[in-house]
Image 1: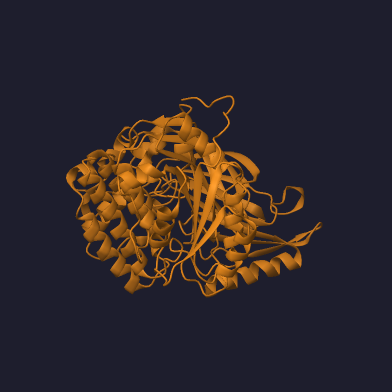
Image 2 (image 1 turned 45 degrees about the vertical axis):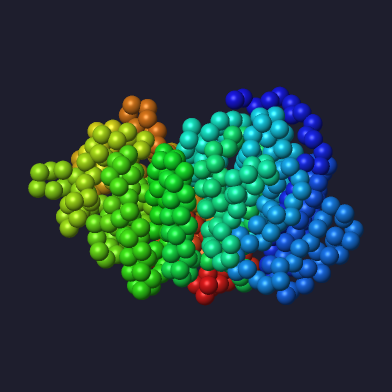
Length: 541
């Protein structure tokens, strides 16, 4: 439904916010204050400390002495996870509605009002809004599951909008307290990583009426350099992947047991499109032992899928990756799988065929057919573009043909621009025409060159810049793409370029986790030194 021109006043003292924390004295009071600052709609804030020893409870107690809406509960022993403290808070609340907040995150102004107004107006048991992931210390923000929250909407039953299974967070939502208690919906207790997967599945299985709002209602702080990483970031050991598989399996089983076959199938599709692609992008960063264990666990999990789970969009990137994993008993083709896991996906050569001329993954895995690529819409094809930054800022692009689809579509031009990761700033946009030449085996059939400004008035500012492309075809079709960083010509060289304004501009081309070309740019000697120090820290980490 369309957004309202104005929002009615929300009822006072209707919401409880449960804040959980462990050993987080540096941030917990900021989280609690952000909940208290939501205004009259908040009746109570229940801060549950999971037996911290860093002084968190003392800080909360001092704050509670000045704020009557704040209650502090300290667990007698550490639970080992997030589920038990959240359940403790849920038991303690008295308000008609409840929200959850982690100690290292914050609620933005107006979050509770937006969710409460939607829940009351639409008579919804659940109201959900936009969560943004804020990378610290840079401050870059990325919206989580943004398409779900593009406009205001009401979903009478989750089965009518299976995409809801993609948002497994519990913290960007407001719940009717009586609804949770009536259906016995709680988090897994004890140490259970990804407990919100299970909680969300239990909520969806109960069939709530759900209101969706486009407002920002939660800020998820991502601190990759923290001494103690969050569960979602601490992926160094394969035990994290095992825990994620267990949570995904449990969530699927909950939905299936509730008779929600469509939601259960959507949950399996979500795993292929999200979890599998995310971990495959990082697989090459791990040692052989990790990769073999990861591969074995993944094959066992995917073996539980049935034919219908694979039938829809069989060459969608996640499904294709899953079929390759199932087809091979040992890890293989990791660089190619990494590119396919990128967003948007890139399928690099070789483009093999079987004896009958049918497209297949490779000569050694002919059972993994790619035949649907021959009829898949151009905008959905995993097109591959190579990019190489040459001297004087010349960017050389090469577009690979994909079983003749690219040649038939007739690529005309490419718009290239750099986008700064920290703030999304776009710079240096250039357009180049593709050079046409006949295809030859797996060689790219089109190439183009553009010059990007690295020094002078057109210089890129300091920061990390990612290359974004828009491919244009003969019939007017356009396609967004990223570029594969070529490494067959040697490791990209760092360049220190003279600059009248800055003295020196340091440009470091590199490949991201997904294999895409990016640049680190620093101005002046001090900036260049900072880039080098940052590189050393990343290597050590």
